[in-house]
Amino acid sequence: MEWKKELSTMKPYKPGRSIEDVKKVYGLKEIVKLASNENPYGCSSDVVEFLTSSTMPFEIYPDGHATILREKLAEKHGVQEEAILFGNGSDEIISIICRALLDNNAHTVMPSPSFPQYAHNAKIEGAAISEIPLVNGQHDLDAHLAAINEQTKIMWICNPNNPTGNLIPHNELISFIHKIPSDILVVLDEAYYEYVTDPAHVDSINLLERFPNIIILRTFSKAYGLASFRIGYAVATPEIIIELNKIRNPFNTNTLAVAVASKALEDDIFIDKCRTLNEEQRKRFNMYACENGLHIYDSQTNFVLIEVPCDADDATESLLTDGYIVRSGNALGTPGHVRITIGTEEQNTGLFKAFDRLLNENR
Ligand SMILES: *Cc1c(COP(=O)(O)O)cnc(C)c1O
View 1 (cartoon, rainbow, N blue to C red):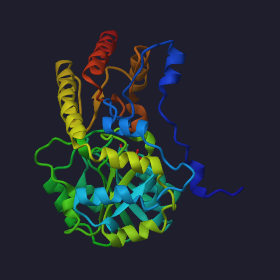
View 2: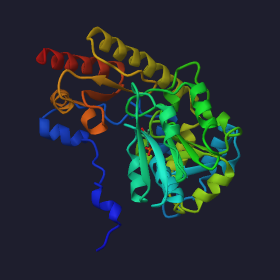
View 3: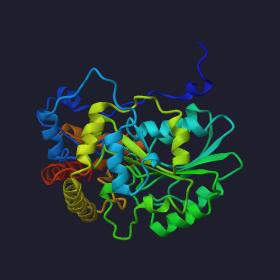
View 4: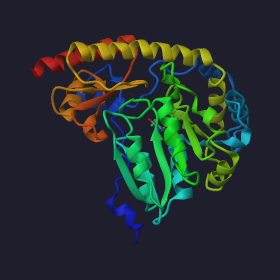
């Protein structure tokens, strides 16, 4: 077969190690997975109760419009219902955006290292990509602007950035968007929005009126604790959403996902609690790094990127033998560091013990 030539240099997505796999290979009973930024507190108890008490017409196709969730989200964000697009995770929305705007005459600009799906999907469409190196974990916004050319269709911003966790100061973000030509789409991927505690941070949905060329991505996979259901959404002007909707598969979100996400949305207390607990635990990581003279990035998310005393793959392997799954920076473009999802108090205490051993072995 003659595959798209772009595929020749690409590889299928390789998932992180599963809990079951690690148990088997390392002969461990207890595994703590701190590798994919899932919510260590699970999800709202309202969701659990709903799932055990309700029945659904499984034989009926889902509501492709996701009406019940759409109504609640539109109200929550104070936007029109037509300003929202749902995806099978925000991952799918990233691919829809690329499919809608990119081809082999197009160019797109993104930070690096950052979330790999921007580059992955842009490559599939054959677009030219400018990857702009981070500076101290932060977007180099001036360099992003300087990379714009006649063919530029999409500017990607990951805020806070995965894998560094850094948040762009709001005034810098505004002056950046202000300088971008209005026919270029600016994607603000805010998968960790609910974890941000910086008091100066402003909800970017407020920017939609001023900047009609932005699209904001949010997800139920992280703070809402619903990663297994695969549901995320975008907010933009109805004019943008109409175009993206032409590409969206008719039943891209399923009945159960829409139902549980709309339940989860009612429980603000759960999200507030997770944000607070996460911030307390994030402080412990910052203190741990400081006490041990390890570099750590300034995170506003539920993960930290922290320095290790040896090769990152070796460090990851060493933590695995103690039952802690983390992500090696070698795979993330941040060698010398590992990315650790911030767990519960107990999980983190255990992780620090395993990390102590790693440090002792490498002294
Ligand atoms: C996890 C993550 C996503 C994808 O989330 P899904 O909604 O589960 O597809 C998108 N962007 C960033 C930066 C992420 O970390």
